[in-house]
Amino acid sequence: MTDRSPEQLARACADAMFSRDQATQRMGMRLLDAGPGSAKLAMPVREDMIQGHGTCHGGFLFALADSAFAFACNSYNDATVAIGCSIDYVAPARLGDELTASAFEQSRSGRTGNYDVRIENQHGQLIALFHGKSYKVRGTVLAQETEE
Image 1 (cartoon, one colour):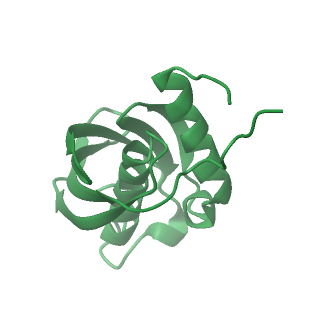
Image 2 (cartoon, rainbow, N blue to C red):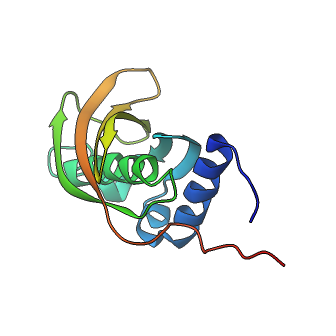
């Protein structure tokens, strides 16, 4: 088994999850950064994401925040799922905007954790605030390594 720093482990977990995450990839999200208890993703607002009022559908904003939350709470190589999430929409995202979701761990103890995600547009304007609660389940994110 190789020893990894917490930063290396977090990035390896994020890379492994991203490679398997078809939903995140198909929405055009990109993994920008990952660290222990944190992650940053970006997503362009495309034409097929615009709803009837001419702004980005809230479901896409939720998905972006939820993905950043998932990468952050799985950064310790413990398989972790959401047990509750909420979002506050602060300002509209528009066609052509480049959104960035930054997730940060607020607490982690036992099997649960709390994470906040901030979505901003390319001008640094706050678009949405998300809070997620995580629950550690059985298993790991990475395949078990064996010594040769």
